[in-house]
Image 1 (cartoon, rainbow, N blue to C red):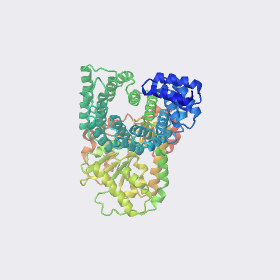
Image 2 (spheres, rainbow, N blue to C red; image 1 turned 90 degrees about the horizontal axis):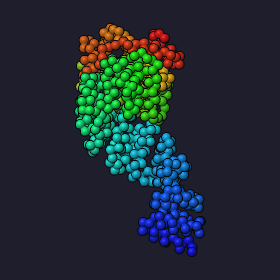
Image 3 (spheres, one colour; image 1 turned 45 degrees about the vertical axis):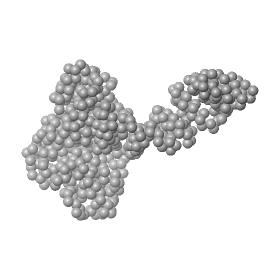
Image 4 (cartoon, helix red, strand yellow; image 1 turned 120 degrees about the vertical axis):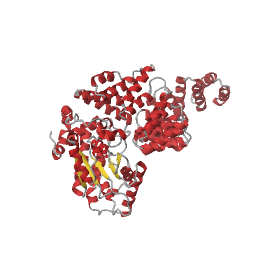
Length: 618
């Protein structure tokens, strides 16, 4: 019998649902006609549908050998190998995906699993070119773009997934997390609110909504939202942890202890409670007891958080080696969770901006025109230098509106990337108008003077001076070694700048680049500056503040000396200094770097010139 006459009985068996029978007929036919492509194809199909994976592999390999250009055979074999866990072999077949949706889809997934994110993105782009309505691939592409540090690309992919009908809680969560990572607070809240409204019973989205409220300063609503989740949470779960951290962040330690006590009374004495107990004890300076709880923290708690707690406890107990190792582990965990970010490092961007300052210095100032607002005052200084302590005290002055690390200037710099060297008056005035527009969205603009506190604006003096040549600028100084060490110890949200502090060497090099930028700006631009020193603030607060108030042309307020009162009224603090501002001004962090000198020896040559220039000692 010819091969053609043997095909119909096999097809009839398959139509009848008898896949084992069809496979048996096909294999008997192949014994006489081993080179028949139709028979091999039917045998492969029957074996796949019968769940006979080893036999399916044999027939698919034979089919591919007979017809190397057969995209369907290649795809089916690659999918089978992936299903068998043989991803390397599957990827070898899937790399040449051409315009095949199924094969490019598989290639993207396999590249993603092996961490080859750029290749995964290319494959997913090809899959979407073939089928732009594939919601799952839009979601996968969003995750890949986020891993590549492409914030706009990630957000667009997740938004497209939702627009194309991806009505699942996971996609909303992924979009929220991308917006959180890439610092779009307001948009994150809008997405979280929409997701929570669509899926009110989804606990993770409800928690995300609470966290988004908190990040936007709506802390009363955030606490209420997280407490609502507690009413339905089984056991001691994520809502307890996040609510506990929010209460700790708000310096509501009694409420934190009550949360722990209530959970224990309900029989929810889970291992994770050691995390919250440890934080409470650490905040109450009961470090030995906190250390005991910290050792009990299970692996279900993020290592970023658990290592931070262990590190801070070890630091306060004077165990420098142990603390440094734990801070290093915290930073490594943060990097592992966040992945890479696209583009140059913050240090590299700072060096490039510094190179443009001579050109910026040649430009005449742009008139204020009909700008009704007084120029902002800028508080700058390397992170962890005391800027949050200073801005908290200035909040006591009713004539000031203090903005804590808000994105007004960032929005302007994105919209006007050449602002520092912009010669077009209309463009500069448009950039200035955008700054005020952003400020009006974030705070009260009822005649009060804006205080724009953002430490690393000191690396953007070209843009600041172009916008507001008459701005008063306050630089907060602290010993370079203490600042760099403190940045390494801080659990920052890892944006492009804060990533610099996950490695002590890069932190020191970034300090050098930022202060070089500041030094160049002071030399080239007619900046109106005043310096405040952290060590003098903690030693003689009034003596350090009175010259500042005179510089600003303001009247002295006795409330300036009561920073705890201001801290209690300000709500959530978005910086790593939240735990300090609610406490009496302390000095135990002064000269802390000396206890870690052995770990800092490699970076001292980088910092030594700045130690000398600022009048400190090594």
